[in-house]
Length: 298
Image 1: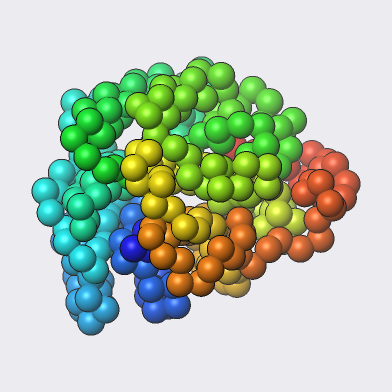
Image 2: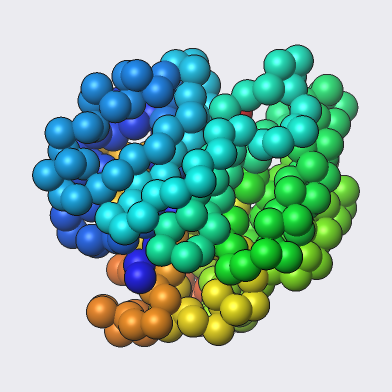
């Protein structure tokens, strides 16, 4: 079973890119974030294309920011829209959806950005993560589970192209990383980092300052699995090709193959980034003119 997560950064704007990618990658289950559509608009836009390709769809959105979805070519059962008991800002937002897909409980998650450390949105983010930990722990106790999506947290310093550019910013603070560590303590396995423990792997590149061709990115799109699912992983990688060209999302899909890897164990990023040193860092330290800074999405 091939499972993928992708912050699509507006499903309407990326409609053609998404359909092309589905045909190329042929995932069995897809978790989408930041669709920015209502449930009705998502189904109207994608229903025929998904039906032709054998996908069922569950979506949770209000037509503004946020919005999450799960697509499945297998079962799509026991759908839950929203994070049960989760906080709002001030009202609950469409940032989580869950379904059981061929025996695995799958969560598509779009964790709040946090904006700035002194912003109320940061406290909201930490609270949201605390509730997510409890919800995931309760469900993981009953069977296999995957928590996939845009976590808006770089788990470690190696997941950031230049930590100095994020000094004092969200996504790398000790409190955020501690909250993520508690979720991992459920226990869940960060399957990409488990497979590629020392490689430079990013999933997000700012649109500005040529961040993508320079590979000035961060890894914030995570694939977390209960140990029984992690044991089934045969390949996991970032589909960097989906970030290339025009009209793309600023994120790339992360793909996980369970039980069988039809493309083999292809590497941490496909295709690999260019113009890198042997250490994986850029050949020169970035100046302030080439900083990516905190991701500019909610």
